[in-house]
Image 1: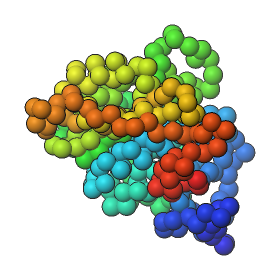
Image 2: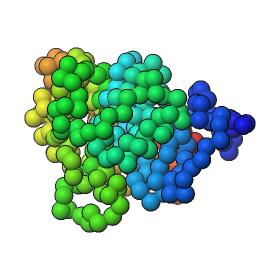
Image 3: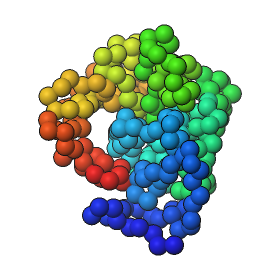
Image 4: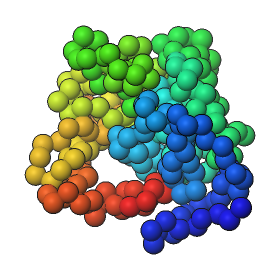
Length: 278
């Protein structure tokens, strides 16, 4: 089988995974899609599918923790954030936590396709369950793309896989922050995406978990519009000098689309860095 090494004039970087060299049988209700370089991901046609938020979380975390040797992805869904981080951090061991069995099934298929089995551990469980991670497990980088909306604040009657990714059916930002704080190594980073309008909820969750905001970057989905989400980098407050606690540095907004709807040049560069077609 010939491996396609380019896509619409873009040269795919990185190693060719084992799945790319063999014929793959994709069920009618699933798709197999590009995610990073030659890496691909299995998704349900009508279920939850990876998003710009996922790509940005993986990029932001791996950019500011480039030497991470152990990575934890909380509420990992179909594995998009963890797999993009694994593609960038080639020497890292990644552990993911996901409660939905269907998402875990898809993530395991993708990990096998991408040849990640020896350094990518997918655990099926609720991140709030103390048994899903050993008390002594520590990570250099913790990633999170939590649900944004409290139960009852919107219509939840859609595909169950989608609903759990949008609504706080199994924990909120406070649960993510508590889990991250409990399992960060000294000097480790918790990178998370969250609605810009709900920043006060994130800050409250950080304080309760003894985390301190180090940096944040608003994300503007169309040039000229207000940011809808922001990327946040947090650390354990005890690991920082007193003068840096709760003194997060606000970076300039990252723009996704130009006013005419085209891909913004900086976002195109971000996509290249994550090994995704610009």
